[in-house]
Length: 86
Image (cartoon, rainbow, N blue to C red; front, side):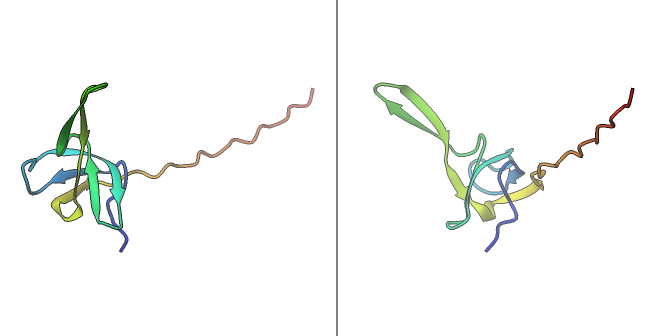
């Protein structure tokens, strides 16, 4: 099944502890139907060498609402250089 929400899309969380938060999609896992949203489900981990690290966790695709789809990169038209004869 193809997901309508892609990377860099803006979404709003509908359920869970982070309900009401808006953010951009960082990563999409279409097989498990889960996504990572910036600032949502933040997890902390202590590494003795690195110290405290934070990262976002995956949430279910059905728990978010699409606010703004990611814009596809556009190809700019190249202007043809006119050769000037002297």
